[in-house]
Length: 136
Figure 1 (cartoon, rainbow, N blue to C red):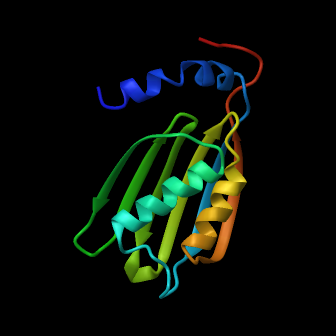
Figure 2 (figure 1 turned 90 degrees about the vertical axis):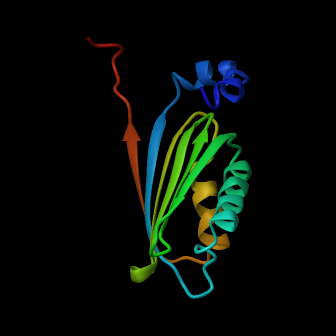
């Protein structure tokens, strides 16, 4: 299974994060003509760098480039995942960062917003998870 070897090296990290707060950062933004979002390799490098800046660990990446130039990029993180979706015809970028544990989600978002030269950035944070123990 892809990523199992990389994931196994973060077993202790995942145990600690299992009881930590979980948060979804949902981001909608506009791309500018200077936004480097049409090059999937560059977009991937920028996303990986942003995760590292936020203290996260990238285990794997996957990307699809659609015929119209739209890109879907997913980074599997030891701390959960980051997905980026672009719509070039609308100059729109949507990003979801699901995080738990020690990753600084706001730092990841700030790094991405700056490096991708995004405007009209709207960030919605949603607390995830259930409290009060396990249910069946």
